[in-house]
Image (cartoon, rainbow, N blue to C red; front, side, top):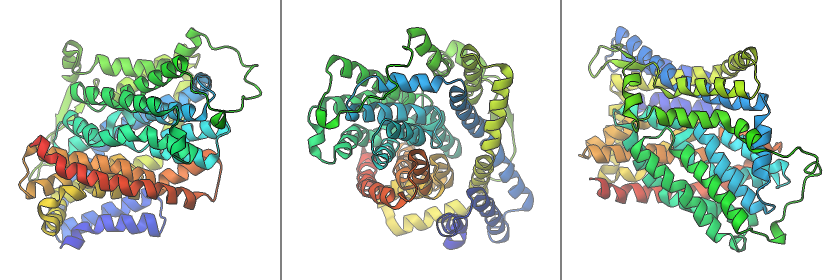
Length: 513
């Protein structure tokens, strides 16, 4: 029975890693398999299978796909208005030391892009920028793969953790703070590791150790604070903004200069028009507005948050055992606020309404296969959950590991991201499995949330070795044929990462009981 319950997941592993099938096709077939097992062997009725699928479609469309479309649209619009060119020039003017630029662009700006948009932008854009500055392409891709690991759980305005909370009925802010705590040691170590990789040895830390420590702390502390007081939406965005500010301030106050890591000055650097305060603010405006709107409508300001949140509709889609009304929040939801910020910011940047609507239409069209994939994955998870398939897998996992199950929770999460390339999809596939397994070993609500958060933590590690991430990096640096080198490098980082996560999750559960 275990293998039948696991069959949709086994199919995805084979289809995506062996058959190299398109994700939207593989996930659609996984849904069909879940239907077949759920109806044919688990006793699920056809109407309940339809209702479970529709509930998955509802969750996928609102709020998940809405956030993804809005975030990618915002980023794409900054490319169309050339605001991203200004942002790039601002970043690259900070220092001539490649180690500083790699931290600023790969760690700080990469984290910002992950928090705002996700879906590969945080690898593609920083890696492309670094390679364009003259940093060896494979090195540029390698450091960006490392940098993108930690913030992945909070990608696209925290959608992996928001989704995980929706599927497990655990408050997303609780998941956010637990994820940040689990990732804390790696968040602090990442800037050091990126610097060592940049120089090829520990010698690269010469003169950089204080900045690396500052970069880690500047990322972690705001992430913890925002996770606790607001939730996952702005946690990584805030951490990345503070990190970029800290790196810029440190580089200006205590310039790091080592001839061994000096960058050659671009030929056109003198020709470019100077960036004024106004032009810089205009370039960053859509992202500034997103931050302000999400902050203004958060729980920190109940006078705004409460009436907007009340604009909602609850619909009972699945009426079988375990079913509950699904709530659509129509205004106080990140996707709506991001779209508003994008249109306002784009208007100030000089984009016409027709240009913005065309860009939005093209964004939706370009994401069509991603949409089908996410809808199919979430619908599959809903069918598996309501049919009892997830519970059957949890029972087997607990029977095999006993009370040591939390030690492998992060590893399971990493497998989900390795297969799908998405932390959101990993949380959808295995989130309920994690809580069911924690419940089976007698864990209380806090430990259940801790183990569920481990799925998102593990997803961060899996992101590094995901074929999708490596393919994006290869495309960004224009170095086809380097897939094997990057995978070999990423695997060397992934193994100690996931082992450390196992220890942190297992022993850390005692702190939240």
